[in-house]
Length: 154
Image (cartoon, rainbow, N blue to C red; front, top):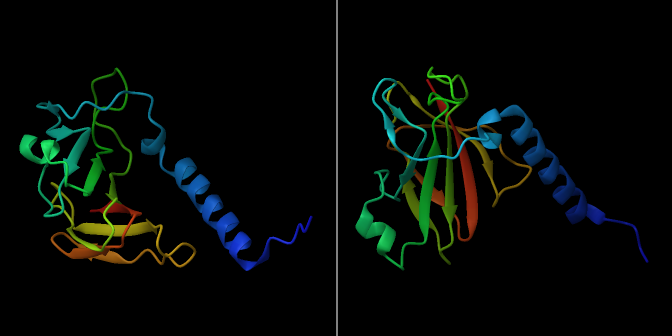
């Protein structure tokens, strides 16, 4: 048996290291509270918002559309993190998942008190993420069958 992992294996190891580091650095990715999507009137945020490719919240009709293959999950770090009613202090993360067989042009959503989004990972370009910044409303080409994660900048 050859134990030589080669360049592809080393790239995979580095990618898994990066994912592990992201989970460690972003507590929002390991919260133990169930996300509900309900608006907290006092704080003015939702803990999770589901986003369509046009950058708008997903409608009930879109949820029922069996052909929808790309959507975003915006987990807001400003939402209440525990049973104590207070604003959270975590970062806000946008995860975009594309199950389609082709590129989907995804519009980065607007978010109150934000200036834009910083890419933190793109599974199509592992090991080459540079933290590129994007403005609200920019269109990002999400490659086929991939996941892209962004961090909110304010």
